[in-house]
Length: 240
Image (cartoon, rainbow, N blue to C red; front, side, top):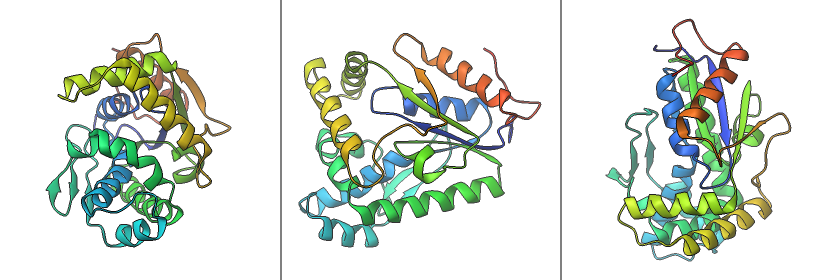
């Protein structure tokens, strides 16, 4: 199934819609690479917090982003996330980072820097493996606007809060649905109203509401969409 996906699947949407799980499993099923752009913003945010900086200090954040040693892998089975050589996959999901990431990711220079890097990673994968599933909040609109398949995942705020609370609990982080709902709504507002690359669906994106769908159902639906767009090789696995 290696190299079955040809091209870029751009997967956007707010937190709690299942983007990360769907993107990783879809990439694995279609023999493609996977890129979590949100993890890159979270790594910069973690670096900002570890340096004792104010996430709202745009100039200081921009300077730190220039020097940050970020490394991110593209394997859907084991996406490597490293800051200064340290595995920070768990650290970037902590509540402190979650609270500060919108401020950091709204800094224009940070977005310019990371978008350029994301595009380089995508180009390298397309030249090699041939296909990649990229998830984030501005993939279809900014990072890969020419993607042949753009998907915007949605779900009700209550469903997303419940999912986020369950994820936090499973990871050993204290969380209640009420707290998660407040966090989700706050992040939605900040991401959708920022001046640079706000969260929004691309005009030609396919909207998929995951509220009442299982992860497997979403993956099958997206694999079928990729097949209908002519993006899959003969060895791709579309159905369960």
